[in-house]
Amino acid sequence: MTLPACIQCKSEYTYHDGDLIVCPECAFEWKEGEQHGSADEIPTIVDSNGQPLEDGDFVTVIKDLKIKGSSSVVKVGTKVKIRLVPDASDGHNIDCKIPTIGAMKLKSEFVKKA
Image (cartoon, rainbow, N blue to C red; front, side, top):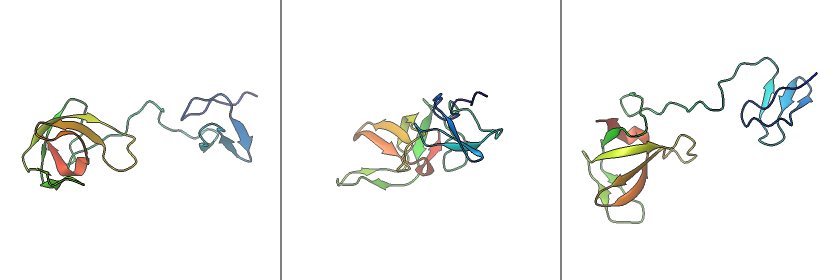
């Protein structure tokens, strides 16, 4: 019997551990026959109003945001073009370039789709 490739990282080196299938490369575990979304699916990132965001969208900042380690502030109403970062572990899931400040990461909860 051939075991399926890992559904998360596509590694072919999976093995049985009791009733689970385990991937030694990414440590993902699942039960055989369990349905999961493909690894290529990007989680949906939504703005403060629940509207789904996509790469290249323009968004408006809805709250003054202090910049850590600086006296600068991103003002309410600042409009920027975004690039999504779905696997951000710190919650800053948007990359953008703010004209007066430069490259920044933002949290989607502080923007709304323009």
